[in-house]
Structures are given as C-alpha cells and as structure tokens.
Length: 436
Image (cartoon, rainbow, N blue to C red):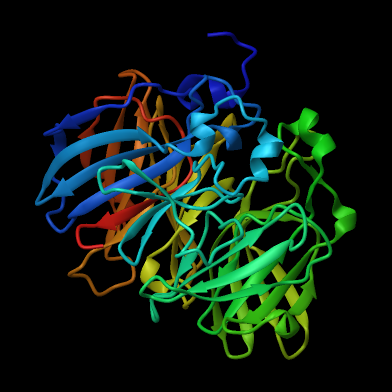
C-alpha cells in the first residue's frame, strides 16, 4: 500500500469491496438477551478505491442482528444510489442532483422506514436486510437535501431536520409527524452558504449553528471539499420555536468555531444549555484543531451566550440515551480520539452532574468508531443500557461488535461478536429495534 495515500484510504480507513453475508456468528462473553434488533453503521467506502476526501466515498452499511443472546448475522452492503451507478460523476455536479447521494454518513429509522443519510441529498430507504429501495422524499413533499443528523423527539415522535444548499435557500427547516408525514417546511435566512452539519433541539425550540465553514468551489483543490474556513463570516446560534418560522428566529453571536456534533440541548427556565464537541476551526490550511467538550448557555432574557470548556481531551461522536434528546441529560458518551486520526482509542462516559468521567480503553492495536447507546427496555435509570461499537483488531485483521455496560464502563466488554470481515472506520450508526 503506497505510503503517500491520505489517511482515509489506508490502514483501517481503506475501503473494503466484498459484500458479505455470514450467519451464526461466534460470540465471546454473553450478549444481553434484551438486545433484540440490528446494530447498523454507515461510512464512506469508495468503490473505485479513491476519493478526494473522506466525506465523499460511497456509502456502505454494516449490520449485525442480535436476538435472544445470539448474533444471527453480519451483512455489509453498498447503498446503491444514482451516484454509485455513476462512479465517475463530478462531485460538484453531483451536489446539484438531489438523488446523486453518497448516502454515506448516518442511518436511522422513523415511521417504519430505515433511511441512509448524507447531508447534501435526499435520504435513501433500505430494507431490514440492507438492500436499497430508493430515494425517499416524503411522498413528494421534500425538495431540499436532508441533514445526516435529524432529531427524533422522544415525547412527540416527530422527526425534525433541515437541509442546506450552495444556492438560496441556504437553510430550510422541516418537521415530520410521528407517522411519517412532512407537515412543515420553513426557509431560514442566513448570510450565506455554509456547511451546517448538525443542529440542536429542545422541548420547545430548534437551535441553528451558523458557523464559518463557507462553501467555496475554488477550495476543492486544497482541502478536497469545496469549503473553506472564513472567520470573517462570523458565528451565531439561532433559537426558533419548533413550530415557528424565519421571523421567529433570535440570533446570538458567539466566537468563531466549528461543531460537527452536539451531544444534546435542553431548557432550564429561560436558559438553553447546549453541550457540544467544539473545534476552534475546521478545514483551515489543512491543520484542524481537535474537538473538545464545551457547554454553551443561552440566556434568552439577557440576550447572551456563555461558553465553558468542560474537558480537554480530544473527543468526537457524542451520543446519549435517545429518550433524552432535547431534554435534560446527565450522561454523555464520546469516542476518545487518537492523535493520528479520527479513530477511537477509548470510550469516555461523562457524568455532567458531578464533573467526572469513566474510561474504557480499547487497548493496543484496537481501534473503534462511534459507540451507540441502546437503552435497556427493563431499565429505569438514564444510564441503564449498553454501548455498542464496531472495533478493528489489527493483529487479527478483522473487526468485532463490542458490547459494553453503559452504566459501568469499568466492566469492560460484556460480549464480543466476532465478524468475518473488516469494518472500515466510518461515521454514524443506530440501533434498529426488532419492532421499528
């Protein structure tokens, strides 16, 4: 393998090309019998072996089905989009076609559908066996891209999301009912075209993060993406009622920074608390700052935002118990990143009520990706449940699905499902319960 390849095309970031189906997987330890469903994860896997940036490879879904203490199967499948069928398409031209998606960033379920997501295009629906059904536009009502990070409200079942564009409208908000009907779309005014990767919700609000990662086609040659870091654009948070519109947004200026992923947001009186993995910059002359856990507090009475650093370790891919999305949380789970790239060397559980943390070290020669929290259906505490993550073992050259006790990471791996293939480093995943 050539040494001059970028990080995202070598070692365990390198693509794997074979689509595998294997059954009756070997397990070390004991899988909790309450885990009945599928652990699915998405990530870039360029079918040609090459892409100009980690974010641009063709989407491949990896999945393991667990049932009654057994690991029934492992599958990996490409998401077969029009872009997959046209592997030589120009990436800038592909952005202009809503169906030419890489579908490589996240996978979720809502209203009986499994959707593979990538923020510049439409979502793609999949079968439970990971075969591609096709683009999903909510019965013809969605005519913008869909973010890779929608939020499902645990109280209403609504799916809240947005789309951003290179050309106006730069930002559009969408609200989908619990039954899957797109019931609201609102254009939101922002100064220009930026990469808006994620957003926040609370019980009553959505909060936009308008940050200075600015679309610039001329920057493609430098960073591999048509985006540049431009602090002169400014940075702001926009608070809008969840059923509101552009006229209702109140904007709050903050120091220039970038956030790929927030942990969660919630309301305390007339304050809004937002915990995020904050970077000082992104795509800035090829030297990016690490993401660290910060807290923003928006005081709606005073019109101010305070910013506090909560931890000084390099962390990303924050997750929590999904029953608390938009509500007050105590715990958060993140990947503790290596100095050599966006891969996990450890998992960290933050207890934000008493400013403490707990760490599960993966160990030498082992590399992980995002860990997903799965609530124990028989539990009552916020951290009753498990963390599931795909982990690569360098010595074996294969990957595992590792199951940890979310309440006590010091217990180590409760169970390890041994996979017949290597799962390259990827982005985001979800637990899809058996009755989704």
